[in-house]
Length: 186
Image (tube, rainbow, N blue to C red):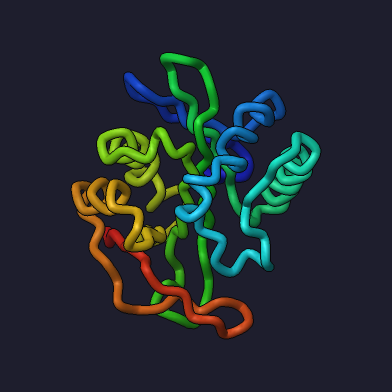
């Protein structure tokens, strides 16, 4: 399956993960304007974007870029929808990363959630939907994601799913070294 031709949807009792759509913009503004969530977003190697959006216009611009990225095969941006409220409460970005470092040929996953969803069991529920198919979707033997030390609930969720901390840096396009990554090998 080519994820850029046919983007799958995943769901369990709590959440639906599906390609981000335009009607998610207002919900996602609540995520990307959430001051408590901001320190947990992974903006490593993102050309200076810190993902702090405070207007609908800026959120719309981000959404339009995500659509372009998907059309061009750069990355997939899924919305995380809470089934009990039908609200988009976060996003997952994932892509196959080719680089000359430890994280070469890995599925790099970025999870951005509203701060009230930054709870270990919710995170584990969300990640349990997307991580298993990631190996095939992105043709990789490792899935990696960032979890800074302050992300204690996220770290609990990751370790419960078998992720281990890496002492290796992710090296950015400009040579910057980024740390605090967790990895799961197939």
